[in-house]
Image (cartoon, rainbow, N blue to C red; front, side, top):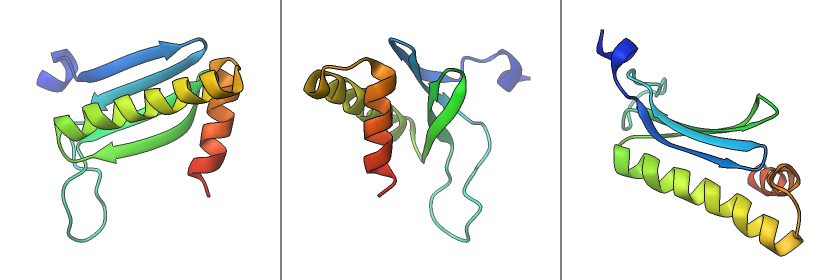
Length: 97
């Protein structure tokens, strides 16, 4: 019942047409043997499509991860003097290396 009614959102940030959303998942998404549970998730959406996902153990990690992702996009926008979607493409390319 709580999952349906509770506020699971850690943070949500819009930068132009890019949305960064961090939420409490409610279930452990660590499917590997051992390790900390993965209970929080940050996702980056461009044009409604998911482009990146990172998961975290505790609320504070989720807040820090959200802030980091937001700052990566903003820093790229400033450095390249581009809008958020283009900045995200450049950040995403570096993350995948």
